[in-house]
Length: 509
Ligand code: KIV
Ligand code: ZN
Image (cartoon, rainbow, N blue to C red):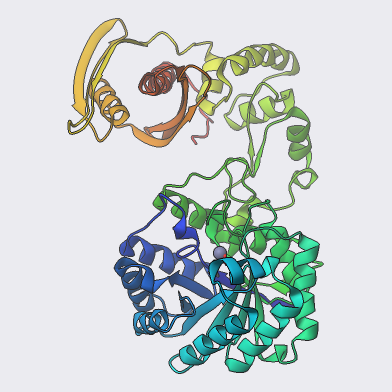
C-alpha cells in the first residue's frame, strides 16, 4: 500500500491574499463545498483575526463542510488563537494553524528577538491552542532560509508542546529542490519525537520551484502538502494542487497517493479562476487552455498516430473532454485532414493539397482557425463583407454611466443603436447586440496591451450563438475599438456560417 499524502488546501487563505482576488463569504462557501467534493483533507478557511469578514467565512465554511478538517490561521498571539477557536465553533473537525518566524532574518528583523525567545513564544502559543483544539499545526515561517540545527530544536519543542503537524514553509520561494528535500530529511533524522507529528510542505513559487520543492519534501518524509488551486497565492503563488496531484498519479515510481478526485480538477480550476477574477496562463501545467492542445505539424501527426507519443496525461483524468489538435499556420496536412473528416468532409489527396494551400493563407491572416472557419474555407466564402463598422461613440467617466452609440452597415443597410453598460466596452458590445437583435453569449474576452509608445490593444474573444462557438480578433490603438473589431469579426463569421452549406455529418462544437 502506498503512503497517503494529505492535501491541505489554502486557496481560501494564502490564495485569497492575492490583490484583486478577495471573495466574500458566500463565494468562499461555494468554493469550500467544491473542495470537499474534490477530496481535499484540510481546508484552510481563513485568518479570522484579520477581519470580521474573514472570521465570518471561517464560521460559515465550518457549518458548510463535513469531511475535511477546517483550519484557521493565527499568529503566536493569544488573542488570535481565541478568535480562531471562536470561529471554528461549528466545525465538525477543526485545526488551529499557529506559528512564528524561524529564520534569523525574521527573528532579528521582524520580531527583534532571539532564537530562545522565539521558541518560548511558539511553545506558549501551541500549549494555549491545545487547551481548546486537539489538532494543532505549527508553522515555522521562513523555514526555507532557517538554520537546520535551530529548526530541528524548534520543531522538537513544538511537538513536545502538543503540535501534531509541523509546517516547514519556504515562505520566500528561495530553496532549491535538493536543499528543501534535505531540510525535510534532516528534520526526519534529527527530531527525536518526529514520530508524533507529520511534516508539511508549504512552498512559494518565487523562482518557479514550488512544485519541485514540494515533491522533494514528500520524497524525503513529508506527508502533508499545502497547495492552492491554479497555484494562486502571494507574489508568484503557492504550489499548485493540480500539479502535485497529477505528478503523484502519473509517476507510478512514486509510492504515494492522494484522496483527490482528479476528474474534478478542470472544473475546480475554472471555478476558482472565474470567482477570483484571476485568468489562467494558457500554458499553465494541467489546467492551462493549451495544456492538451497540439499545434505544430510534427506533434499533431504524432498524436494522431498514437496520443501517447506526446501526451503523458489522459485529458479525461483531469476532466477535460479530449485533447485538441489546434489549427494554426504551423499545422500540417494530417491535422487539417483530421478536422475536415471530423466535420464530415471527405477529400482525396489532390484536393487536400489545394485545400491546404488555401488553409495556410487563411491561417496566416487569422492566427487561430476554428470549425466555422474551416466550413467557410470549404464553402469558399470569406466572412469580411457582411458587417462593417461605420460609427462608434462612447461617453464615460465618473460619475457617468458609460453609454455607447454604434452604427454598423449590415448587408449594406445602416443600423444604429445606443446602450449603457458597466464599462465602455460592455456598453458598446450591448449596443451591437441590440443592432444584431440576436442572443449572443460572450464566453471569453481577453485584452492585452501591446505596450510601446502607442497604446495598442489586442482583443481575443469567443462568443456563442445558436450552440456554435465563434472566435474574433481585433487590434487597435483604442481597446474599445479593438473590442468592436474583434466582436464584429466573430459576428461576420456567424453571418457567413449561417448562409453556408455545411455537410450533413458535421459535428457541432
Ligand atoms: O508562507 C508562509 O510562511 C505562510 C505561513 C503563514 C504558513 O503562509
Ligand atoms: Zn504561504
